[in-house]
Length: 226
Image (tube, rainbow, N blue to C red; front, side):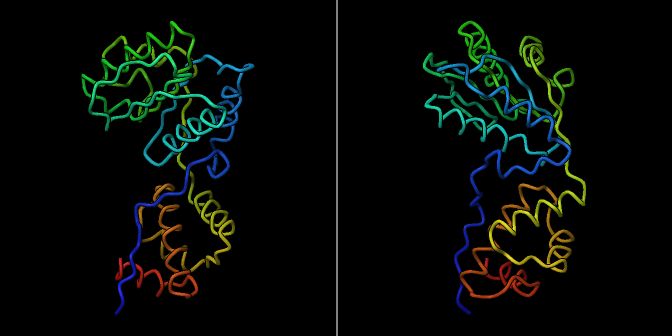
């Protein structure tokens, strides 16, 4: 049997348009309002998003970065995978910090330094983590600064909302996703919406490559050939 190469790690570019808000609609609307530029500058503010894995924190942070980038702004980024010390760049119009709950001492030191300099230069900070600021096991000066501005909680989608999001994403791809395939997928794969969207994108490509309709046998075949 011919093996078909699949890029399982390929994820569609996160945007505000392809984020399914579900119960988080008001939060996303607030975030988009704050991201609107004031003249040629970025509106200075501090916002912290928190919520469980799969609630879309990283998606929204990436969407914000891309929106700022489209406006011609440079953005400083820090996450728990950043292993080298980075000096604050005064050309940055904003700072984004992801996975703050997982920062090691060196990353916490970098984050605090960026906070101080961003505040001095009136640059916004957009951060995200699993827990509310008061629950974070971080150095006190950093934890306090994460709570300075807008603190926004995100919720997971319900089962019905997850199905609606999958249906919307499938329709946008022109992909016929039956209830049987959706049931099969939700029973056997993570219900994290980001993972499900990645899986749907992979299934779409596999269906195109094999010239077959999206069925349960196709899903099983994809897994055997991955």
